[in-house]
Length: 312
Image: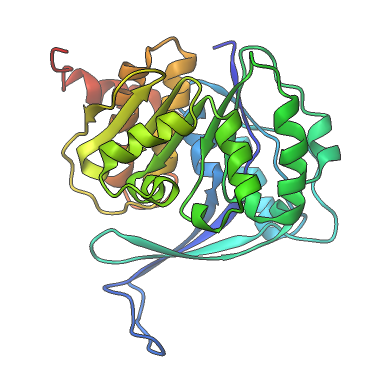
């Protein structure tokens, strides 16, 4: 593929704890399994890279052991690192608690990834076929918000921008949210996030409302095992069915969906087929434990080949 995914979000370390259930306030619970692994934006990048898309990380990263772990994982996935490490500070981490039902809860500690500057991004020059992906998480950090607010409007219309607002979208100020809404070519989020932005509890109504606010090319609203809703510019919401699997860990499912969707578009798929492929990628991701469980291209192709698309 000639195109690249340039990720201008945050790659961190995930400390993943599997528990029978969350404890009550002030309580305790013994984890049944523990894993320390790269996460955050790494999951999006790995999902895209495993489909054969060239990927580059434009975000900030630190010099300590967590930064080393994230960079090593990116090297293993063939992801280019565009900026040097920030001296004197490590990459941050998120504690991800996964209960017996596969639902996850996060606690995040910021590090070097929250210190992105406009000077860092000034050296990043996307080509006309490149896709820039950003996350609402970055807009929560003052330095990153200032950097992205200066850089995103400078990108030409030939550069496609994909925005995932993240679960803390309700904490974004009007200016930060407005910047992302205005520049997004594709806006992708889950139903809860769509409701937070639009005030519409029904996912289809929220998707339609989002399409009036953003998504110069379209909007995706992920609806879990049901798949997702796709709204192409000027069109009505279309349900793209999901795939039935036994979910063991939903951590990273949305990231897998986004990375596979971007890679499918870059490979020439139309948005409807790209959304279907992304649904399959997310289904395979939740069927395995861990945050970065997006499938390799060959595994995804075999999964899809056994499940022909329904007539449209």
